[in-house]
Amino acid sequence: MGKQDNAKEYYTIDVLHIVKSLWRRAWLIALCGFLAAAIGFSIAAFAIAPTYSSSIKLYVNNSSFSLGNTSFSISSSELTAAQGLVRTYGEILDSRSTLERVIDKANVDYTWKQLSGMIHYAPSNDTEIMLVTVTCENPYEASKIANTIAQVLPVRISEIIDGASMEVVDSAIPDVDKVAPSITRYTGVGLILGVLVAMIILIIAALLDDTIHDEEYILRTYKYPILGKVPNLLDTGSKSYAYYSSKNQPKQNN
Image (cartoon, rainbow, N blue to C red; front, side):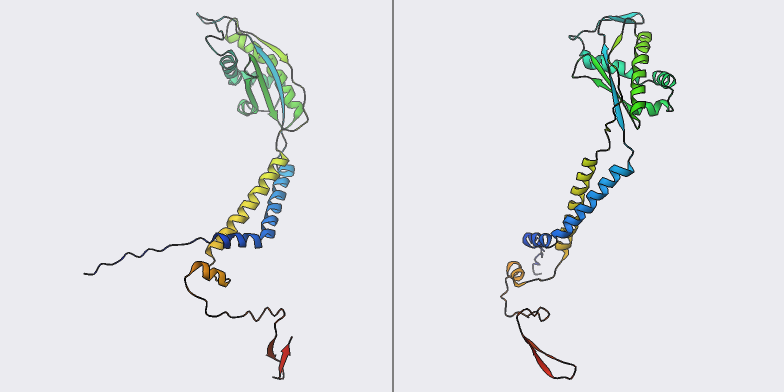
């Protein structure tokens, strides 16, 4: 039996052809980017409700305290005060009973789970100061909820942890500068996505295009000589060729 060779097919990507295809349709890429940027701007400006935030700062007391029959002494050598105490007090703030007190005292129409999603707490610059930020669609309501937390949370902590205390460093004030959505970010993301999508579609179209556009493509792709070239009779330019009129009389076009 004869030995059969395994035929292998190779697909060559013509980078120059892709670049030329993108360059010829640069106007289309720019148009897609402009349209996508306009859509992003419209979504940020008109479709998404703006949100505002307001913050309070609370000093976390890290002195000794007792929980039940067990005494604790928190110091920087035993526990990172900024992160350890903020996590502990933050869990108390995020509890259902605490948030329900905040809702009742602030007289706002939220469930405790909704309010939990509006509150963010973290240590301020790795210090013993707890930064609590409330974000909602009304800047005055955000300030009201944050100041209510400043009233409720120290009381709740003193009820749960003996000897623990918190002091208000800064109360909340209404901030009318919205925090989201960012029109600049949405517009920029839309522009980038529009350009990328257009380029990807054009690149795929160029890869799937097996049309021979010029003799240079044949010389680069195949090892065959060019024996002749058929002129493009539709593109007259300065060339002249003969054609027939309606009376079948040949005329010369210059």
